Structures are given as C-alpha cells and as structure tokens.
Length: 379
Image 1 (cartoon, rainbow, N blue to C red):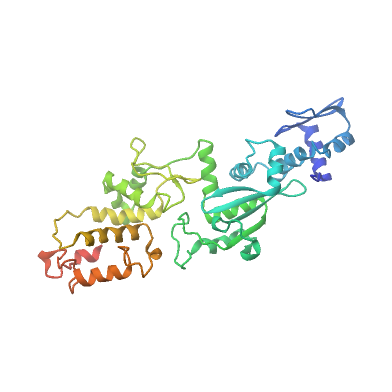
Image 2 (image 1 turned 90 degrees about the vertical axis):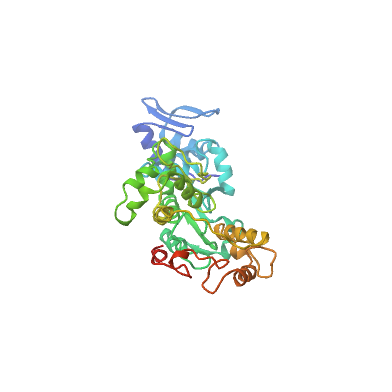
C-alpha cells in the first residue's frame, strides 16, 4: 500500500487548479464543474469531483501509486537538474514501464550498472525513491560487511587509490576498490556520488542521449595543445590508433570512446562498450601521446639476438602480461607461464650481459659498448 501524504494531495490540487496534471498516465484537471481525475489505459475516470473527492480517490489502491509517482518526480526531483533527473528516470525504466510495473519492481530493488558500480533504486512508503551505490563485486554482500557512507564527498577517497594503494590518475579506469556502500541516498546525493566516482559521466550520458554531446576529436585536441604538449600534433595518424588501442578500450577505461582521429576519419581501435561516453582525449592520453610522439621520431634499426623459440615466445608472453596487467595473477610456482617471475629472471641471467643488453647487443653500438647515451635519458 502506498502512503499518500496530505502535502502530496495539497500539491496535486494546487497544480490541477493551476495548469493541470498530465504525467506518467495520470491526468487531473479542474474546471467550473469540479475536478476530473483519470488514468490512461485503465477504467479509472472520475468527473465533477470536489477537492475532498480527489483526496479520497487519490488514496485508492489503483490511483495512489500514480499520485505519489507524480509528486516524487515533479515536486521532489523537479526539473532544475535535467541530467540528474534523466538518469534517475533511466534507473527505473520510467520511459518504458508503467507506474504499477515500476512500483512492483522498485519494492525489491531495480539495479543499474554504471561503470564498476551498481545503483539500486528502491521505493519508500510515500513513493519517494531511495538509492544505494556499491561496487559490482559486492553484489549480494550484506551491507553490515561493507564500509557504509552517506556523504557523496566520501567517494573522493574511495576513488583515489586502487586495491594496492596506488594512486588512480584515471578515475574511469576499471580499478575502483570494493568493500563500501552508500545507502539511503536521495536522488541528488546519488547523482553526486556517481559524479565523484566517475566525473561528468551522468551529464555526458544524458547529453549524448539528447543528441547534444559535443565531441572533440584527436586533431582538434592536438592542435590546441601548448607548451611541452604541443608536440602531440606531430603524432602520425597510425600512431593515434595505437594510442586508442593502448588506452581507450574496456580493459583500461570504462568510458565508451566517441572521439575519432577527426570528424572524417574513424579510428580502427575498438571504442568500448561503456555505459557513458568519452567526448574527447583525456589528459592521461595527451600526456602519454607526448611520450609516444617523441618515440615515433626514432628511426627503426635492425638488431640480431640469440634466442631459442621458447625464449622468443617468453618475451612475447611477458609483454602481453604487463600490457594486460596480469603479472599479479601469475603464481611464483607456475614456471610454465612465460611471464613467471623466476622464468623472467632466468632469461635475464642467461641472455643479458653485465650492462643489461639483451644477447649482449647494444642499443646504440656506435656510442660505446654499453649503448647508453644522453639521448636515452631524454626518454
């Protein structure tokens, strides 16, 4: 049973007398003969009602959910925060399902995935919604076993470091720690918590949904760089694809990349499947691109190394493990894994000389036996 409060009924009558109510299937209007209350796709239609009649009718089981639903969205949430409102409506499928269907689902909780977190919307007795936010890895875990928070700003500390205590320069990286929960949030605090965890994700999601997302492609981003970063404009177009493949896929970032090389040239790299879009190359991508621009200036050389077939495959396995951040998953005892630490140490002992050159081959043999130059220090 949904509890319709006097404040809700007062607001309903005032709005009906002023401009009328037409929201989510509920219509209430007023004229000289009284009030008319009806619900779409139902047998509910009452005419010539007094204010007292409306109050009594609004508390009936087949009408009450529509009244409290109208009050929550129009009077509590309102329209001042359009991105927040759109997300909260999305979190309960408001555009796809009727009020009774949503209320039934909300009583047990409706979940929305947002990056690495789950947002659960539930129904209070008066029709207001309450929201819970937790890491997806903690789905089903009792809240008593998690660190509880209510202040959205507490999410700053949660988002700052990963499980190993390392700083997270990219807040949308799939490295958010688990073990926490924000409970009993209202709509404003729920949206603010998400924006702390994933900055601007709600706004950009809704701007894209409304066809208003302003996308800045690589060329435009590169051309506006100044100072030490202005060199990224020189990065070859093929290398921009490698940048996107390295930084902008689901395993590295939870955003869905919408920017391309320029408006007329798409990148071959997968843009990802994230719930919210990436509208421009981020600062981490630009900083990394500066390094890669310098590296791409180097001329290729031909080196000759002495390696067995298994050693060649091992070097490939080590690069893959580092690139995919799997080194911590490789057990010390698993010497059959190419990126195993002892396998790598054995390869280094066998194939590196005292100066650290693979197979004794200097990187810059013309500069001396160890191949070390000031040029290396610049990189």
